[in-house]
Structure formats: C-alpha cells, structure tokens
Image 1 (cartoon, rainbow, N blue to C red):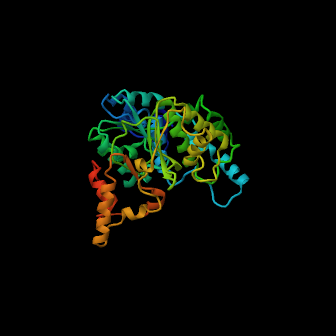
Image 2: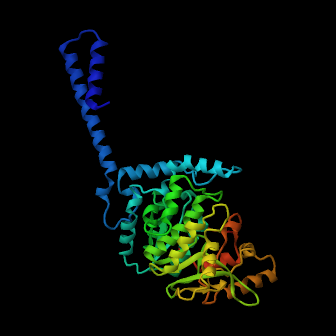
Length: 418
C-alpha cells in the first residue's frame, strides 16, 4: 500500500470512528497526518540509501559481488540462509531414471549451471584482478557452502601466501563471494595479500570449448548426473576451462604449500610410480600448471564431455587426465611435464593419518624429524593432506603436519590440537 493511500485510509478511519469534534481536533488530526507522511518518506529514503551501496565503494575496496547491486546482495543473503540444503547432492538408493527425474526438478535451483546477474561479471572481475599486478593467476575452486570452508581449507591459503607473498589467488566460488566469505578471507586481506572470491559463469567458461554440448545436455535434464555429487565433477571441469582461458595454476584446497610454483610451466604430478620401472602409474589433477590455450586442455575437456560418468569417483578428474595421456602415447608433442610424486604428493594417502599424529615415544619423535628433513627438499612444492581420508582427524601438536604448519603459515589460526 503506498504512503498516500495508507494515510488516506487512516484519515477516513479516524473520521468515521469519532463523533464530530471542534476545529481544534481536526487541526490536530491534520498535523498528525503530515507528521506521519514525513516520517514514512524519510524511512523510504533511508532504505534507498542503504541499498545504493555501490555509490559508497571506493577503488581501494575489495571487489565482492554482494556490494555491486541490491539484487545480488539479496540473492547472496538468501543463499547463506539456505546453506543446509545442497541441490547438487542426489538422493541415495534410487535408480538412474529416478535420479534423472529428481535432477530435472532441481534444475531451477542450481544457479551454478546458469548465467546470473553476478556470474556474468566473472570475466571483467577476473580481468580487473589480474590488472592488480598479477602476472600469473593462481586459483582454487570451492563448490560447497561458505560455512564449510574450515581451518583445513584456510591452511591452503595461509601456506600459499607464506610461499608466494606477492602472488594473486582467485577463489572460484559462489558461496565465498559473499559477506561470510569476506569474513573468512579478511585476515589475509588485512595483511595486504591479493585474494578475491568470484562467482563463476559456467556457460561463459565452456563456450567454444568441447565441454559446451555437455553443459547443454545437463541443463536440458537429459543427462544422468550420477550419484557422485555434481559439485565434484563441476570442479573438475571448471579448473580445465579456467586454465584454458586464463592459464596459470590450479590447486586443491587440502594442501600445505611449501614453495612457490613460479619455475613450473605446463606441469602435472604423478601420484604413484611403478617400483621397478619408476614410470608413473597414477596421475592426479590436484595441482595443474598450464599456459593459456594449451592444446592438451582441449583434449581433457573433450574426454570429460564424451565419456562423462557421474557414478565413479575420480573418473572425470584424476583418471581422466591419465586416460588422455595414455591414449596420446605420453606427453611428446604437448610440451607437458609430469613430475614425480614427491613434487605435489610426497605423503601417500594410505599413510597420511600418521603424519597428523603426535609422537608417543623417542622412536616416533625421530621418525617425525626424519620425515620433516625429507620434506624439506627443494623438489617438493606441496604436501597433500587427502582430506577425504583425514578430514575427521585432528592435527596433533608435535606431528609432522603440525610442525610443517608452524613453518609455513602467516595467520596460523589455531588449527593444531594441543
């Protein structure tokens, strides 16, 4: 109801509900109506000023989507209020047809698959970020709610800036591009590090790539997303598209970064080697470094689109990279280097738990020191913590990982259990 209609209704009600009064009474009523109209007008103006935040943002303020217009801000607030529900996680124990039908019903809610007011700014925001003195774009991807971005994930950022204090790190994430995400990153921003969360635009990222038909099938509801959460496979795809269109470095969010990657180009890492031949057996896509428009990235995207299987963990990620390189007969002709496991994955995932445990006796203390000495080699760039296996384990004081953290963090915010 508009202010004029509201004041008229109040005025008529007062006239009908009272007996005729003196002229002084009507004068009092008239003055009251004027005051009411004035106060309501002031309140409306205050709301306009509150939502017009863009006019108060300076050039030095960090660029976050929720500051750019009131529609986006409202969307982000609603997103955070609904964080307990994830439309990308399929129900258990359903058939393929039932899952596809379920997915069709979810499609209107899955904003990451579409272009939105905020996501359409992706390229310009990345471009502006790179113009802040960023020769190389480093990026991570976070598809979960911002509330799930915990101390383990923050450790990756913390150790990254310890090893790369002048580097630029982009967090490709809708949930982190929000007030809550800003609060998580504030301790790094306050120290002057160049870090920014940006909402991805998947239609833009896959446009004119082999993955574009795959997204069209997904958005039409005709492709089975599989029982593996679609967010996992979207992360596998997005890292390929960003590396292809912008180049740079991709990293998982369960790493301790030990040194900078500036001397690496067109590189991925092996996860394991054959003990006899010393040839790689398993490759991993947890760290990837590529020049812009590298041709093997097109091969990876083609494989993703044509062989997609959402029912096998790793099939569209690490195993995809391995399949393509095996089919191509190796790396010859692609200007691609495969580093041994020590480069990015020096801790075997099966034994990773031991690196989080504090020593119980002198023998175990010597083991910890030996592992630390081994991990200090210059050929080691990061330690993968394999969060899928270790996320429920505490990092205990005196453990290998605890000692690594103490030497490779800036904020060092209470991740170690005393």
